[in-house]
Image (cartoon, rainbow, N blue to C red; front, side, top):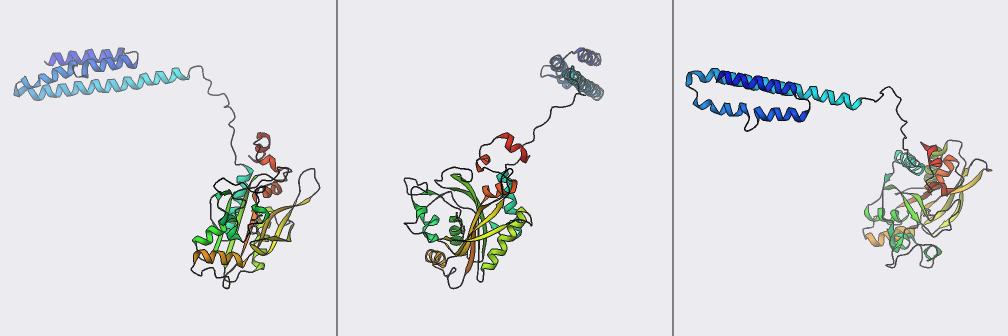
Length: 338
Ligand code: PHE
């Protein structure tokens, strides 16, 4: 039996040594160690071995198995090594690699992140609302009467259901006040939709960022200070900003904010970037009517709101002449922001 074991081991080791590829190596393994392998079969003969020889034969079997297994593993590694070398043959690893093209964030994404960062530092939290809105949240609760021109079919995209694509992010003001009691300090970036004629400063889908600040003693000074600080942070301390009296149904007094645009090859010009004002008590009355808890009693709370056009901010930030560049996805334009 001892001779047999030795013969099996020798035979196996020489097969392993001769194996030229992993398939031959696997065949060699099956022949000895497989279910019907030579070593497996001889091992099953152990039960017929007389007691006094069991220990020495068992030890011999074990050492044969170990030697064969180790040889198999070593050969496997050696074959792998050869395969790796072959795979690399003909490849010049000293050649410089091809340039990788880095992607980058779209200017609108960059400007949104920047605006959010500035306002979050001032204590505003992010809020959101649906882009498919109802007339209550987009208009009625914002003191906008049924015959207001903004509600016209010519200005607003309506669905047959009567719902609409929100014309501004101001609807998020209403949703925020419905869901939380004052103090409120939120910003809501998002898309807004209007049936505008598309030109160098207008798109029918554009990006706004709404802000709302409600507490018991918010003043017009807070509004001006907050927005002036915002624009200086955004565009630098020398930035020219002006507040023009305006009308919005949901704020009183109301202003439009212009910032000087210095576009390449053009004379500097004012461009309207935001609307703002002190929240009209009629809005608090509408919220109070739907909340029924007196949290927004127009006698007790005051606040300001603003809505800015992020596309316009991007134009000012980088001196972009035409808003359409922001949606055309021309790589020559976008590359400049990488
Ligand atoms: N919703 C206004 C617009 O889209 C902007 C605005 C927001 C004005 C908040 C006042 C207060 O033009």
